[in-house]
Structure formats: C-alpha cells, structure tokens
Image (cartoon, each protein chain N blue to C red):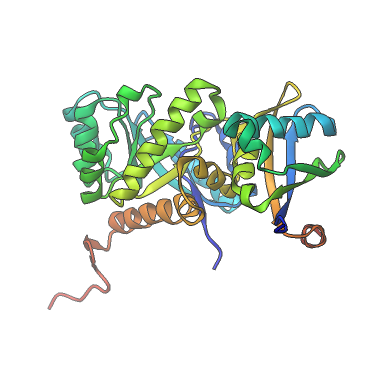
Length: 244
Length: 104
C-alpha cells in the first residue's frame, strides 16, 4: 500500500491567496495528500473556505490548524476552550516551561512545537515527554531551521533535536516532521523530508512515519471527534432510532 | 576485497541560475562536507555520472552505506553557484539501466 504523506505546517499567510496557491500546487506536485496552513489570529471562515477550495481544486486534503504561543497557563486553557472545537489540529508553541508542561498534560493539544533555537528555552525533556505520552500530544519538528542555519547554530540545533527525538522515542511520543516553510524554494518532497529526519536519529521507517502515519493519525482522530456522530472515544452514533 | 555496493540517484535541480556540472557537484560535495565533515564525505564515494542541463536532471553515484547521508545532504542544499536552489531526489536504483528505465 502506498503511503499518504502530510505536511501540517506550511507557514504562509492565509490572507495571501497567491502565495498559498503556489505552495499548495507545489505540495501536490511533491505528492502530499494532506496539508495544513496554520491560523494564528483566530478563525476567518472566508479565508478557510478559500484555502479549502484551492486544495480541493488540486486534489489535496486541507486540514484546519491553529497555532498558539501562550504566555501563561491561563492563556493556554482559554485558547483551548475557545478554539479546540473549531480546528482539526491545535499546535502549541512553547518557550516557557510552565506552559510547555500544561500543554503536554492537556489532551486537547495535538502538537508541541519548540521553536526556540536557544537550548535553555527548549523544554522537551523526560518529564515533558512523560506527560505528553500520557496525553495525546506529539512532538513537532520543523525542518526549515535546518535548511536556513549554517555552522555552529545548526550544530547546536541538531544536538537539541537529536536529544529531543531520542527522548520522544523512549517515551513513545509520536514525532511529526513538518516543513515550517513559507517559500517554495524551501519546500521538500516527503521522501526528502524523511531523509532530513535521518539527521535527527530516526531510521527509515520512523522517518517515513513522521511525515505520513503520525500526522495522518492525528487528523483522523480529530476529524472523528469533531464529527456530529462522535460521543466518546470508541463510541459513535451509527444509526439514529425513532423516539417511541 | 569485498565489492562496494552502490546506488544511483536521479536528482532534479531547481534553481534560478543554471549551474555548470562543476558547480553542481561542488555544491553537493559542500553540502555533504558541511553536514558530515571531510571524513564523512570521503565515505560517500560520490561521483557525478550525468548532468542534463536542459532538463536539469543529474545522476549521481554513491556507496550504499552512505545513501542516507547523501540524501540528507542533497535535501539540505539551498544555494548553488550563488543562486537559490533545491535538489529533489527523483529515484534511486542499484543499476544505471534500471534508473533510466524507471525514468522513462
């Protein structure tokens, strides 16, 4: 069976349909079946509809995703309460330890993204991984910094990423590798993304899972939860009976 | 001595400028050296077999043991000959014959 590939982090401004169209077309050319462009400032139904129609035109599945960078734990819970049921994927960007811990604990969070290049602001350690493994959060790794950085900063980032990936594997936290790019020239095919994952210490099967099985599983799970038929995990309405 | 197993990679070059064969392979060597150092690069057995300027498709040969290293290095290329560029692996094969027949 052929794998379906997903890139859940194309960082293009949803307000710029031309740039979005270019990236979507390129993603389709590379063989992605599912892509996501994150919303960072709330939901805009018209923009969402435009992106969805662009994706449908080229035959790519569009996933609605919200990225949030909370300052405090209260910020995070407020955001989740407001947006969880409106987006298919929720990603929390963490550069604060308390927020990172709360996000890893919360079952409404899908992806944990540690964007900081500063070693001291990356909080994906064993404690974080343990919390994430008991909830449903996955670790998201963007490849863009690996393409842009050079020399010592890239070495330091690779060191951090290899450590985080090793911890995630130890605690069975799913790893999702995304591009995180906003320009066509940095886009890579799914197999090339998997090759870059090799730099993080993933073997071929895990690297391919990180661009296919893992992101797809998150989206499928959330789509099921957001559907009108969902009651609880494992329970859904199959057929509605008539009231007697 | 044990025979070295090799793989042939067909790669698609995407660039603003059209680089020469020399510039292309130098960029690949530079990427491998940046990521894995000179010792790592020496293990790759990298060689340019063919470079079609019109279609911007190149064929490179690497040792099987270093295939992952070379693929990661190719994916990390962002500049060639001073212009923005990207290199995408189209196919990988054990023989040139199979590589060319896959490409058809």
